[in-house]
Structures are given as structure tokens and as C-alpha cells.
Image 1: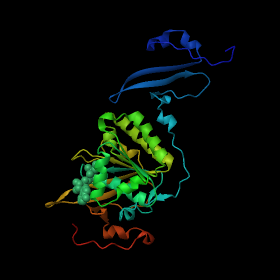
Image 2 (image 1 turned 90 degrees about the vertical axis):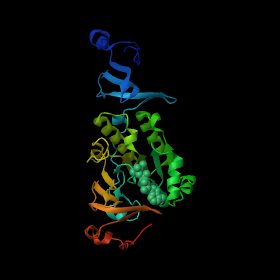
Image 3 (image 1 turned 120 degrees about the vertical axis):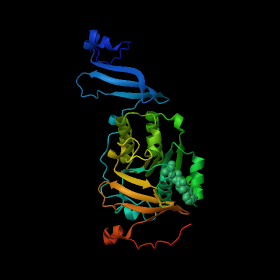
Length: 333
Ligand SMILES: Nc1ncnc2c1ncn2[C@@H]1O[C@H](COP(=O)(O)OP(=O)(O)O)[C@@H](O)[C@H]1O
Ligand SMILES: [Mg+2]
């Protein structure tokens, strides 16, 4: 104190020492490092227990030791939500008739959950969202925890899209992370860096249910989704997060809490009707937007996704937003 310098004194102590040793009442600050398991990952933690004269954060935060040094991952502190001046700016997906369901469009900075059981078309919807964006000059990135880049490119090829071209000209980036290698904290940081590096305006995560597969506590799942949504919001981008729904369950997401922290939910379903299985899409919620409600039929075929908004519902939206009604073809291959 007399020399007016800052000194770090290192020591190895146990929890009870903090309460019994007089040293801890003399020092001006106390930072505790430790490690333990959380959500199936062994992690290092840092906590500012005491810091005289400041209103510091008191929570325990994971940190990593990387080639950049110590990186504290305190998203609640380091990814604060910025209030961007985005009011009124909307994103048109470019997917045939989906924009009709979405009314004025998706407010930039929003994240949408794309929910459905396996096979309902979540991956196709995410890919087409990025592909149509790229054609319209908006860069997009997909973080895939399920399918390899090769499989995604093959799926796009099968739908007749020249995804390769968009990847080659730097409009789309595929980042594949195999499920066993997922480390939530460091991959969240990585996702933020890649989104920033590409300057992506569209962000797809396939799927958040696999990304969070180690999590057991719904509150942690909720917090991670909130952090992902914050990264998207701070960039003014639009996020599409796929999530599966346990088969036969009447809920909107894997944990049943994810929908509470996103700005919108799109439900995909494929119920049996007679001998057929038909596809539906429903915009379940979208903040600050007058969107069409209810289920509308959806077809996945050559060219991608086509949606047929029901006539009655299509009449409910303001006349200026109505595009010339597409005739429903009698039969589609
Ligand atoms: N080229 C295509 N033509 C017609 N249908 C396709 C094509 N590609 C994919 N599909 C349909 O999309 C389904 C897969 O959707 P997908 O997005 O992988 O589902 P999810 O990600 O929800 O599990 C397939 O089962 C198939 O029915
Ligand atoms: Mg999928």
C-alpha cells in the first residue's frame, strides 16, 4: 500500500481457510480458482470473492487457458445484451411463402427456435435460410453438431442448390463439430469468433439439443440458449436454432425451457393423415410481429421448401403484404 503498487499473492488454501485465516480479512481482494465438474465437463472456475471498494461480480465463472492466455468465460458479464438501434429492420428469409407467414419479417437481432421431431425438415430449413440469404447478399454460417459438411453439401445438392458456389465465394461457412468433441464454454466462444470473423448476418445452429446434450439441468440449458441468442443479438444477425422434441411429447423443445429465451418459435411437424405423412409448418411465436398463425402445409422437394398458406389465414394479413397467391399445384413429385 505504501509503494502504491498492485500485488498478487499466490497461495493454496481450502474453503475453510478463508473463514479461519486472518490473512483473508487483511487483503483487499480475493480471487479463488478451482476446478470441478459441471454438466459432464471438467472445468476450471474463477470467482472474485472480495474486492474492496468495487461493485464486483460475485459468481463463479468457467475459464480456459488457451494460446491467448486466460480467457474467462463470463457470458453474463462479457456478453451483455447491447441495445442495438435495429428497430424496424427486418429480415426476409427468401423461402417461398415463409415470408408470407412471417408478416413484416424477422426483426434483426432475433433468434428463432426451429422445433420438430427427427425428419421434420429442420436441417433443410436451416440450410435454405442460409442459401437464400447468400443469394440475397447476406452471409451465413452453420454450426453443425449432427451432420458433416459433406452430408450437408450433399443434401443441398439433392435439393438442386449450388451451395458449393456460395461456400466458394465466401457467403456460407459450414463448421462441423462432432458431438463427442463438444465443449460448451469454449465452443460458445468459438461460435462468437467465427460469426464475427465472417460478419455473418444469418446464424444456424444444428442443433442446440445436441450442443447441450450433456446438460441435465434445464436452467443451464436456458442460460446457454440465452447466451447464444445474445451473441446473435449483439451482431444484429438472425439466428435459427434447431431443436428436437422428444417423440410423442407435447412440448416445444428438448428441455421445455428454450422457447422462453428466444424471440420466436417455428414448429415443424409431420403427422400421419390416412396412409400419408404430411408436413406442416407453424409460426408459433415471433416477438413484435403480426404473423400468420396455425399450421400450414409444407413440401420439401426439388428447389427446397414450399409452403402453402391456408386461404383463410392469408386473408387475415394486411392487403399490402399479400403477394400474388401462388396456385397450389394439383400434384407435386
Ligand atoms: N431432395 C429432397 N427431395 C425431397 N425430400 C427431401 C430431399 N432432401 C430431404 N428431403 C426430406 O427432408 C427430410 C429430412 O429433413 P431434415 O431436415 O434432415 O430433418 P431433421 O433435421 O428435422 O431431422 C427427409 O426425410 C426427406 O423426406
Ligand atoms: Mg437435422
